Structures are given as C-alpha cells and as structure tokens.
Image (spheres, rainbow, N blue to C red):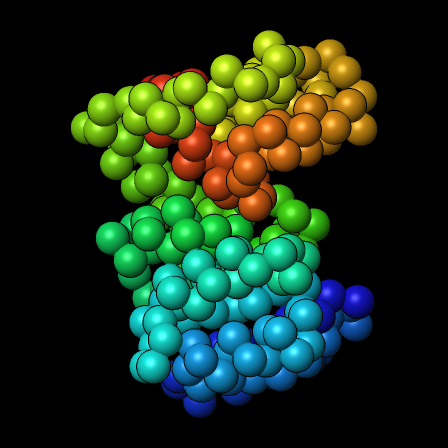
Length: 220
C-alpha cells in the first residue's frame, strides 16, 4: 500500500486529487494539509511514502517544506513530489535542489498522475517531460560546477556510467541492457553512487550529473 499525504492550500484541488487516489486499491491518502507548516507536522506524524506538496503555499512554502523533510534523517523514506501550475521556473528548480523526488503539473491527465505517484513510491526520479526538457535547456548556458565534478571522483567507472544513464532518463532495466548487466546489479551501482554522493534520490542524481558535466544537454 502506497501511503500519500496531500499538501495544497486549494481545497478543491485537494478534494480532486484525493477522490482520484481513493479509487486505487494500492494507494491510501493518510492525511491532508492546507499549508507547509501543517504538512510538515503530518509528515512526521504519519511518515507517508509520498508527500504531494504544492510549491506555493502560505506559512511555509513547498521549497522550504521539501528542504526540511530532506534534512531530517527520520524522514528518509518520504519522497516529496512537487505539484506545480508552471513549467520549470526558479521555484521548481530550487525545490529539486532542496531534495524533491520530482514534479507533476496540476493539469496532468489522471492516468499519468497515478503513474507518477507509483513511480515516485518506487524511488525513481519523477520529472514531467516538459519539465525535464526545460531542466536540460537550463544547463546549456550554465558552466560546470567544479564542486559537483569533484564529488564524482569517489565513483567507480561503472557507477559513473550508471549515473549518466539515470540522467538520460533510463530505467533500471534499460540501464542494465545498456551496460550488459542484470537489473539488480544496475540498481546496486545506482544505490552505491547515491550513498557516495550523499544524494537523497534519483532526481538529485540527475541534477548532479548535469551540474558536474558528466552528462551534456545534447546527450539527452
């Protein structure tokens, strides 16, 4: 059962998301909150698998809520998915850096919304295609971050290869096929890379891969 917390200051949207999620046999909405402060309290109380958090809210916004969740070791199992009305703007980019597992735009079709919740619950990076393209385009004009580049020195060659493939949007199965290894070995390479790089999830691996220059925008 995938346990979900909804955090959005618009009651109508919360009701709509809840009605959709409640229809699924493998998903349970454990609580709802109307602002980030209430949402943080409920995250600590319920320890959901997924926290669906609106990016712009009163009291504490989605970026700060994400940052606090990512910084708390007790909440390591909580995957934050940001809900946004927009494409990739500065708010969304900062939430990714703060530790969000991915994003869903609010006008997404129901099937894709449900799929996104399940993908995030598996621990995979969840980036809507439109946001992924804008994320990649952003790096075209940005210089390589030397700090991110030096962090990659801790990785083995195979781990670096796996991280590069994650950044190109490949699943574990696709990475395994590309590297000619088993899916379990691919997952092991990725998990070890995440530990060495001290990142929370695959979404942060994507950011670091672009910041370091390991993957160039043209590669994706």
